[in-house]
Length: 148
Image 1 (spheres, rainbow, N blue to C red):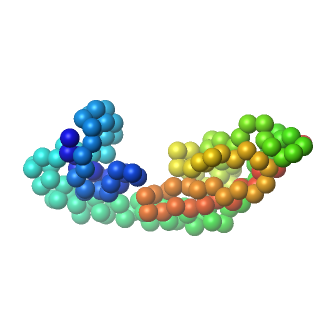
Image 2: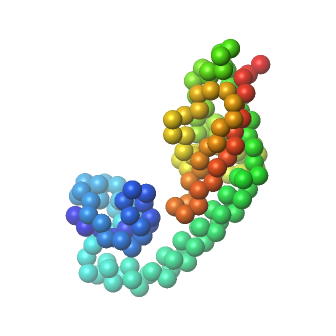
Image 3: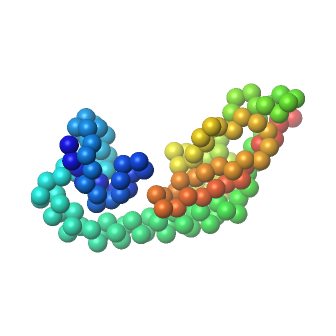
């Protein structure tokens, strides 16, 4: 089933691109979240007429994300977790904990933007990737220290 993407989607395509997806994925995920529209002639014409509005909104979102990325570059977080004598954590650092630490530092970020691939399971310094926008990716330095 062909759909027109209304937003950039990692792994699928960019905004305005016509892609082929399974019908259930389009019907149950893409359409309800307004991430895509059916690829019909009328929808293609509608998308082209709305392209300037989409571009303006995309640019505004990108510039706002760039401002947040500049704030994140100046932030260094410290998170205290229970750890063994060897430096291994009991559990791991979660995106929610990173979000709470960022909020305490004065930066608001949605927890779904934080990419902890592989997790943080040891004491020490770690870089955490934050996907603020499809074109803006920031990194935050996090120091994990053992709880006292």
